[in-house]
Length: 355
Image (spheres, helix red, strand yellow):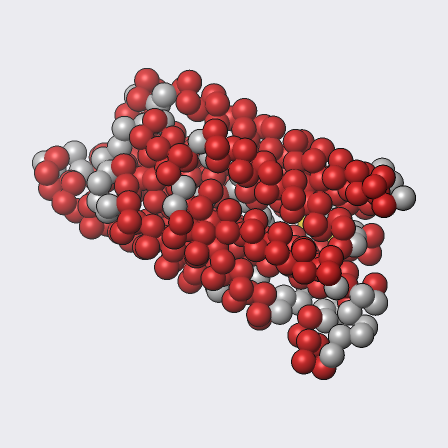
């Protein structure tokens, strides 16, 4: 039970860090275009993060039972996965790099599961067909979206910006700024909603996986009647108290802000006006909303970053500061392998210390 409490604490710490680490995803553009002050933007994003986090559980179900074999997972596995993800998130936040919290958690979980299974790669669910005929697993739910969602974000952001440019070619700059200054309130809220509906669910899934592990292993067999809410007999049933707790924690983290990453995304990559912010946010939010409905845990960071790049490139390629982009891409490439190694190493270290 003590180990579960550590897992729960680590999960909430991860969710809180995810909130302030990925705050920039929802508000960097609306702050850089000066449509909202930083404080107002954070409050706006926190509210829509909360609403989005309460909107569904498809992504949570993928995390809890669609990537690794739940039968080999124990509390230590989940704890080490979370610690690896937390370390990477804090490290990239310190550097001001918008890395993926989603991939950090997934990498940590896969690495920790592999170590728990003594290097048996079959515990990782690469690609299988479920009872409904849908293809699930790491390849269709993580690897393919890791490449396709940024590409869609880049192309979609560029196309939407080009379309808006054609439509607004006769409008004055002042009129465009007035219209999209108001429209960006909608797009920023939609972006916050998309972030909440996708990212908050990942921690819901990891907590549910821990609850299922505790129930099936017998760790919760002596719980008093009032604590029966901790028992989960089916790893794809997400308890409502978990949904509420994760939603509130992410909203609190969002409210804390993440100024290092906001500066990178909102000011260093591309110089934007409200119309550019609207195009980037709307593109990214649509991708996040659709993938959340399909239970695909895509990276909010990858999607909004590439949408911003696409919007900038639609003006001219030199409008994008490719040196900054290169630093961001390195963080993306390294996230899964580094957190996988961290999760693996932490489990091995724990076993060595307790043997």
